[in-house]
Length: 338
Ligand SMILES: Nc1ncnc2c1ncn2[C@@H]1O[C@H](COP(=O)(O)OP(=O)(O)OP(=O)(O)O)[C@@H](O)[C@H]1O
Image 1 (cartoon, helix red, strand yellow):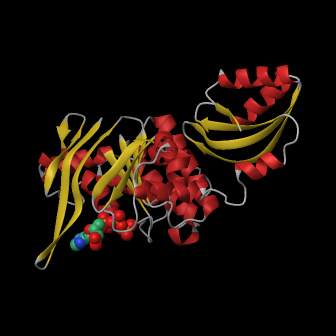
Image 2 (cartoon, helix red, strand yellow):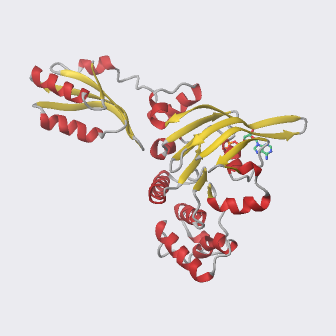
Image 3 (cartoon, helix red, strand yellow):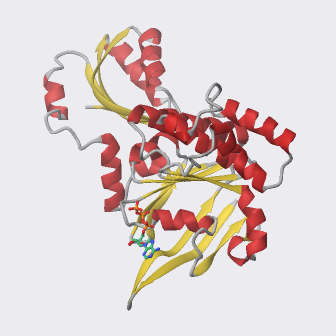
């Protein structure tokens, strides 16, 4: 468990002061993927760098497993840092070292002897999918492969926490997805707690369990990803949700959809996690003598299941339609007859 209380970082710039991080309170559960999102200058990088004290806090506490990180001496901190790995937007690899040597570096610093080091490096290369690239130099790797080296190096000393500072922001969308899948994979396999900062809501949507939204050094809203998507409160959160879900389509309104429906009914199905839209539609079609035709919709996959809505035209005998609606009502999907 990570408990952050009243965490503050001020920078002095001449006579003025910047509150880069301003009295932040957060609890992060072990094994979760926790996202922090905000626009440029919101204070995300400063926040994440405070967690391993790459930046010294002005005030506040960071309790990790009952120990206040902010109170540790430099020597104690060096040991504790082995519990916290970090990956970066621009990878921060050592250019004169091969993949294998980059990954071995933190093990050398920790004083692990050679045979054990090599065994661990082999495991890590396997874990991040870099078999065959062990002897390449960073300049010979793609962006995605460089980040895989960054991840393997960060995991070398078996940390409990992985900090990700805009880890996919320099990557194209496909490579971003492959790195996000790798993060989910190691989160599940190793039970690792991941704290990631990003300015991209689709990163939050795809892999985070919980999220905090930052603006001007403060957290303006936080909660489960699905809750923030379905009920965003703050203006900044609403803008981030729009980044992923888009603005409501002005051309396609419920009225225009209704005009296309002469028989049967128009249903609006709202998915808020837990089920799969594909199987629900096919289950209804199999169980009841009705036909379903998807007219319009926008569904995104989150860690907690699909989120979004579908407009479905359902036709058949009235009693079958009623039974189908009752069945949908018995699931976690909300259904409304338009
Ligand atoms: N070392 C520093 N000295 C002075 N001001 C700083 C320093 N580091 C960050 N700041 C200021 O603190 C504020 C927060 O910066 P930070 O980099 O944490 O934001 P961010 O959300 O990560 O944005 P970005 O994604 O653009 O880096 C900004 O106003 C920034 O100019």
